[in-house]
Length: 167
Image 1 (tube, rainbow, N blue to C red):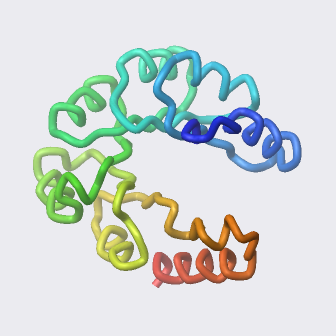
Image 2 (tube, rainbow, N blue to C red):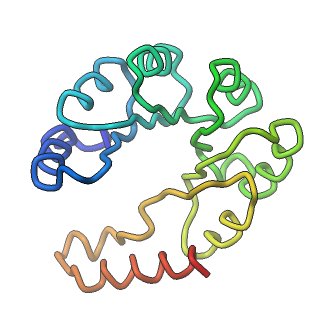
Image 3 (cartoon, rainbow, N blue to C red):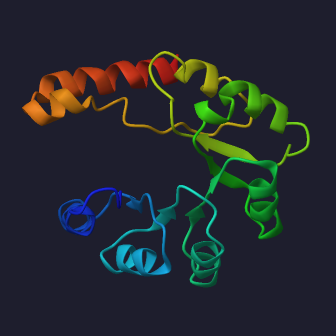
Protein backbone atom coordinates (compact mmCIF):
# COMPACT_ATOMS: atom_id res chain seq x y z
CA UNK A 1 0.00 0.00 0.00
CA UNK A 2 1.18 3.50 -0.78
CA UNK A 3 0.44 4.46 2.84
CA UNK A 4 4.02 3.38 3.48
CA UNK A 5 7.06 5.25 2.16
CA UNK A 6 8.57 1.80 1.52
CA UNK A 7 5.67 0.75 -0.72
CA UNK A 8 7.52 0.43 -4.01
CA UNK A 9 10.52 -1.23 -2.41
CA UNK A 10 8.22 -3.75 -0.72
CA UNK A 11 6.24 -4.43 -3.89
CA UNK A 12 9.42 -4.98 -5.87
CA UNK A 13 10.79 -7.35 -3.21
CA UNK A 14 7.58 -9.39 -3.14
CA UNK A 15 7.51 -9.60 -6.94
CA UNK A 16 11.17 -10.62 -7.10
CA UNK A 17 10.99 -13.18 -4.30
CA UNK A 18 7.54 -14.64 -5.00
CA UNK A 19 6.89 -13.99 -8.71
CA UNK A 20 3.94 -16.41 -8.85
CA UNK A 21 1.86 -14.28 -6.47
CA UNK A 22 -0.73 -11.89 -7.89
CA UNK A 23 0.49 -8.57 -6.57
CA UNK A 24 -1.91 -5.64 -6.25
CA UNK A 25 -0.95 -2.10 -5.18
CA UNK A 26 -3.20 -0.39 -2.65
CA UNK A 27 -3.97 3.20 -1.69
CA UNK A 28 -3.12 4.39 -5.20
CA UNK A 29 -4.07 8.07 -5.59
CA UNK A 30 -2.33 9.07 -8.82
CA UNK A 31 -1.57 7.77 -12.29
CA UNK A 32 2.13 8.11 -11.47
CA UNK A 33 1.75 5.77 -8.49
CA UNK A 34 -0.18 3.30 -10.67
CA UNK A 35 2.54 3.37 -13.33
CA UNK A 36 5.27 2.88 -10.72
CA UNK A 37 3.40 -0.04 -9.17
CA UNK A 38 3.00 -1.76 -12.53
CA UNK A 39 6.67 -1.14 -13.32
CA UNK A 40 7.76 -3.01 -10.18
CA UNK A 41 5.50 -5.97 -10.93
CA UNK A 42 2.00 -5.23 -9.67
CA UNK A 43 -0.84 -6.82 -11.60
CA UNK A 44 -3.66 -4.59 -10.35
CA UNK A 45 -4.52 -1.32 -8.64
CA UNK A 46 -6.77 -0.52 -5.67
CA UNK A 47 -7.60 3.07 -4.77
CA UNK A 48 -9.32 4.51 -1.69
CA UNK A 49 -11.58 6.75 -3.78
CA UNK A 50 -12.80 7.01 -7.34
CA UNK A 51 -10.11 8.82 -9.31
CA UNK A 52 -11.19 9.34 -12.92
CA UNK A 53 -7.55 9.64 -13.98
CA UNK A 54 -6.40 6.43 -12.25
CA UNK A 55 -9.39 4.40 -13.42
CA UNK A 56 -9.12 5.62 -17.00
CA UNK A 57 -5.36 4.97 -17.10
CA UNK A 58 -5.82 1.45 -15.74
CA UNK A 59 -8.61 0.63 -18.17
CA UNK A 60 -6.61 2.05 -21.08
CA UNK A 61 -3.55 0.06 -19.99
CA UNK A 62 -5.56 -3.14 -19.42
CA UNK A 63 -4.63 -3.15 -15.73
CA UNK A 64 -7.33 -4.46 -13.36
CA UNK A 65 -8.55 -1.68 -11.10
CA UNK A 66 -10.69 -1.65 -7.97
CA UNK A 67 -11.62 1.97 -7.28
CA UNK A 68 -12.95 3.07 -3.94
CA UNK A 69 -16.65 3.91 -3.85
CA UNK A 70 -18.80 5.12 -0.99
CA UNK A 71 -21.89 6.64 -2.60
CA UNK A 72 -24.36 5.73 -5.34
CA UNK A 73 -22.75 8.43 -7.51
CA UNK A 74 -19.32 6.78 -7.14
CA UNK A 75 -20.81 3.38 -7.94
CA UNK A 76 -22.59 4.78 -11.00
CA UNK A 77 -19.30 6.21 -12.28
CA UNK A 78 -17.74 2.75 -11.97
CA UNK A 79 -20.73 1.14 -13.68
CA UNK A 80 -20.56 3.69 -16.52
CA UNK A 81 -16.97 2.58 -17.18
CA UNK A 82 -17.94 -1.07 -17.33
CA UNK A 83 -16.70 -2.00 -13.86
CA UNK A 84 -18.73 -4.44 -11.79
CA UNK A 85 -16.32 -4.72 -8.82
CA UNK A 86 -15.35 -1.86 -6.52
CA UNK A 87 -13.90 -1.29 -3.10
CA UNK A 88 -16.49 0.05 -0.62
CA UNK A 89 -14.58 2.46 1.62
CA UNK A 90 -14.83 3.47 4.40
CA UNK A 91 -17.40 0.73 4.91
CA UNK A 92 -18.40 1.21 8.53
CA UNK A 93 -18.41 5.01 8.33
CA UNK A 94 -20.83 4.81 5.40
CA UNK A 95 -23.29 2.44 7.06
CA UNK A 96 -21.56 -0.90 6.61
CA UNK A 97 -23.70 -3.97 6.11
CA UNK A 98 -26.94 -1.98 6.06
CA UNK A 99 -25.74 0.28 3.26
CA UNK A 100 -24.49 -2.65 1.20
CA UNK A 101 -27.87 -4.36 1.61
CA UNK A 102 -29.60 -1.19 0.42
CA UNK A 103 -27.25 -0.88 -2.57
CA UNK A 104 -28.02 -4.43 -3.70
CA UNK A 105 -31.35 -3.34 -5.18
CA UNK A 106 -30.39 -0.50 -7.51
CA UNK A 107 -26.89 -1.92 -8.11
CA UNK A 108 -27.68 -5.64 -8.32
CA UNK A 109 -24.89 -6.23 -10.86
CA UNK A 110 -22.19 -4.69 -8.63
CA UNK A 111 -19.96 -6.57 -6.17
CA UNK A 112 -18.01 -4.92 -3.39
CA UNK A 113 -14.87 -5.33 -1.31
CA UNK A 114 -15.66 -3.51 1.93
CA UNK A 115 -12.71 -2.08 3.88
CA UNK A 116 -12.50 0.43 6.70
CA UNK A 117 -13.92 -0.80 9.97
CA UNK A 118 -14.13 -4.43 8.90
CA UNK A 119 -12.71 -6.70 11.58
CA UNK A 120 -13.10 -9.97 13.41
CA UNK A 121 -16.29 -8.66 15.04
CA UNK A 122 -18.19 -8.17 11.76
CA UNK A 123 -16.39 -10.01 8.96
CA UNK A 124 -19.01 -12.80 8.88
CA UNK A 125 -21.84 -10.28 8.44
CA UNK A 126 -20.08 -8.77 5.44
CA UNK A 127 -19.18 -12.11 3.87
CA UNK A 128 -22.81 -13.26 4.16
CA UNK A 129 -23.92 -10.53 1.75
CA UNK A 130 -24.42 -11.69 -1.85
CA UNK A 131 -22.92 -8.47 -3.22
CA UNK A 132 -19.66 -8.83 -1.27
CA UNK A 133 -16.95 -10.82 -3.04
CA UNK A 134 -14.23 -10.30 -0.41
CA UNK A 135 -13.33 -8.11 2.56
CA UNK A 136 -10.17 -6.20 3.32
CA UNK A 137 -8.46 -4.67 6.27
CA UNK A 138 -5.47 -4.83 8.52
CA UNK A 139 -7.28 -6.91 11.14
CA UNK A 140 -5.58 -10.20 10.19
CA UNK A 141 -2.18 -8.66 10.98
CA UNK A 142 -2.33 -6.98 14.40
CA UNK A 143 0.02 -4.00 14.40
CA UNK A 144 1.40 -4.44 17.94
CA UNK A 145 2.34 -8.07 17.22
CA UNK A 146 3.84 -7.10 13.90
CA UNK A 147 5.93 -4.32 15.48
CA UNK A 148 7.19 -6.74 18.14
CA UNK A 149 8.04 -9.30 15.48
CA UNK A 150 5.66 -11.75 17.15
CA UNK A 151 5.01 -13.79 14.03
CA UNK A 152 3.27 -16.54 16.01
CA UNK A 153 0.59 -14.04 17.11
CA UNK A 154 0.32 -12.68 13.56
CA UNK A 155 -0.07 -16.21 12.18
CA UNK A 156 -2.72 -17.05 14.79
CA UNK A 157 -4.68 -13.88 13.95
CA UNK A 158 -4.52 -14.69 10.23
CA UNK A 159 -5.72 -18.26 10.85
CA UNK A 160 -8.59 -16.94 12.99
CA UNK A 161 -9.62 -14.44 10.30
CA UNK A 162 -9.48 -17.12 7.61
CA UNK A 163 -11.64 -19.47 9.69
CA UNK A 164 -14.24 -16.75 10.24
CA UNK A 165 -14.45 -16.10 6.50
CA UNK A 166 -14.58 -19.78 5.56
CA UNK A 167 -17.26 -20.77 8.11
